[in-house]
Image (cartoon, rainbow, N blue to C red; front, side):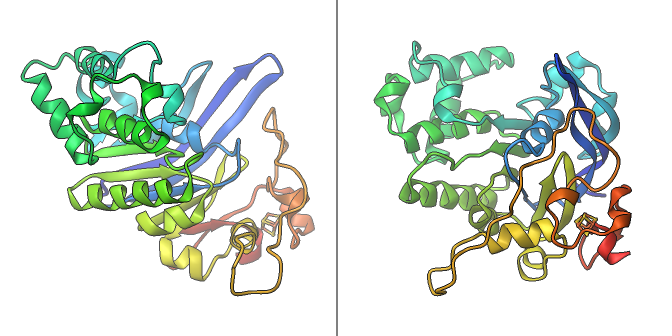
Length: 311
Ligand code: SF4
């Protein structure tokens, strides 16, 4: 049985402009001990996928699909069961932007205590907080500090420690290295590798494919609310199938090459009431007439691709 299995997950937001089809028919699964990286450009549905799994969608809802986690069907649980048994205890989330996740007017210690009281923790909270800080290589000295007294890397470690505090099996990390300089990024990537060895599984959401290649065994590429390609990390990087995946990989600068990195012309699709067909159609160098119909899901070596080219 897969550790986490998502089938045809569809989430939409209600906005004044109409229904935003943020996530459509997204499916993937990972095994125990594996981690998955989710890549794609802004507004492609990456964060909505994470928020759907942890059931924190606001101004919208999950319309259909299944989320099976460690033998439990998460969408069948009542809100109180999910709150009491799953959120933060089994699945937690590192939200995007460490500075935005921490409250500037409270000390770090107060914010840790708040997480524990929200989840009705009874026991030695100080020990738990110190253990959690130690797991991200921080010590007691940060507890009396306020967020503005910490560096960007330390704040990111604090929010990761808060996500780990109740020892969840699965942690969703949304853009954990964005806005950090490259040295701190490397520290955070090494931290994730260490935490994986300690038994945590991650879903890392990032537009930075290099970060994902370091940490994740599986990769899901998202475009326009759909997961257009999914498979083993090495297959996605060495034998990409979807034209969007190929474009993403070709846009990474290679220092040893004289040629400039390529870019994908055009803009992301409007997800308010999108029309039928492949959502990459307007930007795809290989688009065909039949791509105006929804693309088929084709099995690949280790996953699938959503594209008419492989029919
Ligand atoms: Fe391009 Fe067609 Fe494949 Fe879409 S389905 S990525 S338009 S070839």
